[in-house]
Image (cartoon, rainbow, N blue to C red; front, side):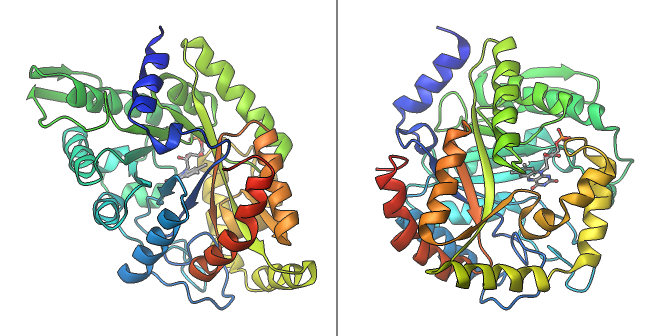
Length: 376
Ligand SMILES: Cc1cc2nc3c(=O)[nH]c(=O)nc-3n(C[C@H](O)[C@H](O)[C@H](O)COP(=O)(O)O)c2cc1C
């Protein structure tokens, strides 16, 4: 049995939500920041407060969703609304959300240059114990230069960031699995007599996620993680990305899962859905999105050149470059089906107004996903 098969078997044996038998795993994305997934001034009851973020997490848990994924953010994107300007730090957020929920996997999203691997490994173990084995770590390298510059030093060149991440995560994995203390003399870390106890509840370690899609990012995901998070600008793009992830993972003798994300505007009638989608578009804070896409286009490699990034501006404004599913429950359920048909194993979603829209989702879309065989 390959190392990966072993690993997946171990996670399955532990009845891990992210490896359960639901055909399309479901989760929520990006509700630990102001404005969540949408850089718009359209009115919403969504706010960044502890009681609100906790209520959203508990609603998703009660609906039987599999995973909660926060965004790692240290500053906003300016403009009129300072998009994502307020955010909760994701290890501390996950620790408390873990205590407030029962079954759902709770993730942290960790920029590797902002935290020592020794500290990160222990923070993760602590949350995995609080969650009784429901912690997940989304490992990101940090593409937003002004954010990384807050931590001192210069932003590393794109592919070097993944080399740094490789060393960082290798140390974290050793801390999670090795009983004997060890020294590290690497390119980036020089550590003495390193040790970490207790070990995680999940064996051998918590579920790992990464969203890399450049050559270096894919390689990192293929080598290290259990789930690659795919930015899906269209279903065709999603299907291609799934193939790329799977073939890269196969080079390492591994078989990893894929998930994506989308924002949702679902109303009882198509006219209402289109009207409310237009309200979101009318309220877009283009100043913050101009800035965000400029930095992303310059710093990330996944979306091609700045011109291609510009075409994706609305998708960036309303859902981090992913798709926005707009329509009636039937129409939106159809888009979930297409997501699954593109080969994705799961999807995390966001809304303008999470709490009421989640209730609507549960009542109106969930039964259709069951009818379509995506859920039971
Ligand atoms: C679902 C998803 C979540 C992400 N979350 C974050 C995040 O919280 N913070 C961050 O700096 N980057 C985040 N990213 C950006 C990725 O880490 C990565 O930089 C991006 O997908 C570009 O890929 P590349 O690094 O291979 O060029 C996210 C990307 C995706 C698709």
